[in-house]
Structure formats: structure tokens, C-alpha cells
Length: 263
Image (cartoon, rainbow, N blue to C red; front, side, top):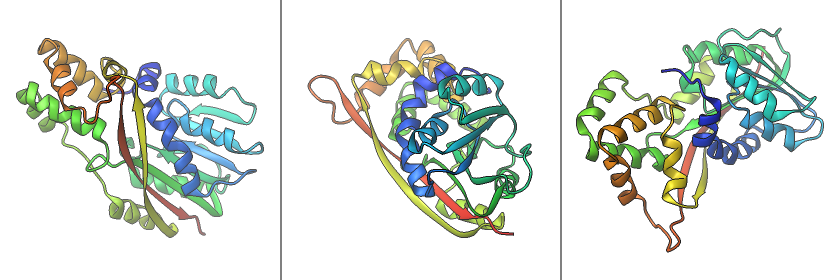
């Protein structure tokens, strides 16, 4: 399954991306006046954050999905931003075009992450920053760990089939650092970026799962239908620290890596 519904993706994950993007920009050391490449721009969360962080920042966003490029272009609506269709592994820009190249929450989706990072480095000027972050799916994303716990309770056979078909890929900070040094980047550093997300109710949290925004949400929709709502019930019971009004917060942790382009 490919990502083909940017509106649904924004409902499911956009609020998380919007909280993470400013933390990522600060980690990368972005400054006003820079020209930045947003690789795998998706719905444009990072691009919008960058544009809002400086009056002279310009952004070029690329993504292989034409629908996502159109969504990002409409959402940014700035003369300082341009968006185009491109894969990360073959960026259509000359060497040293940008002051920084960044990838928000997409590194795990690249067909060839090593090649993509080398392309990001190639298109970044000497001394510029190449940075990426992705969710810590091993230890830092209760939104999904709670979901899979509920799914195992409601439909263990479906979960077993899913994991056999798509074994999880969960790189840690060391693997990210090795990917950056392997691409020839210098002064490589890593960090964990912590945040939390508020939900007004269980429905606020759960209803975006009932779409085909991502492979996981597509699986959630199918299993919830097959179990006649038991997946949702199991998940509701697992949500921690629900307040009297039904609201709650969930934490999250992203893994970030950055390095300096050299020649």
C-alpha cells in the first residue's frame, strides 16, 4: 500500500508532525536567510514550520507522490516556497544548491536510505547541514504501541500475519549516525526529541485511524470492521491517564541526526 491520501494522512499524523517540526528545526540549527531542501515533504509540515521561522527563509520541497506535492503547495501558499515531484534517491538539483537539506519522518520510507542521504549531502553546500528525524517506534511512540497491543488482544492472528508480511524496521540512533558518517558527513550528532500531543476525547484520537492514510491505519480499519468494533474497545481500555472530561495526552519521541557537508 502506498501513501495516496494526503488529507487523511494530515488528520492522522499531521498534528504530530506540526509539534515535532519546530523541535527538529532547532536541532538542525536552521537560521533565517537560508535556502532549505525539504526531502520527502509530504503534506508540508516541515516546510510550513521553516517558512514561519524566518522572513527570509526559502524552501524547496520534493516528494515522489504528486498528490502530496499539490497538498503541500496549497498549504504553504508562499512565494518563498516551491514544490516538485522527485524521489530522494535522485534529486534534480546541482551540487551545493542548498544551505541545508532536511527530511522529516520519511527516512524509513526511502527505497535506498544511504543513497538518499548521499544525495542530500551532494546538494548541500560545503559547511551546510544535512538532517533527518524519524519516530522512535521501538520505545517512543505510545500512539502505535498501544494500538498494536490492542490489535494483538482483538485479532492476534491478523497481527501475526501482518508482522510476517511486513517485519518492522526500527533503526536506532547508532544506526542513524552510521548512515550519516557513511555518506561522508562530518561532525555527526544525534538526539532524542521529546513532545506530547493532546486529544480531546478517544474519538479525537481514534477516528483518524479509520482511513487508509497509511498502511497501519488501513490495517486498523479492516481489523476493526472484522472484529465488529472490538479493536476500538480494546484500545479505549488501554489509554492511560484519561481525565474526567475524556481528554488525555500521549508522549512521543523522535530520533534525530545531523551532520555537516564537506567536500
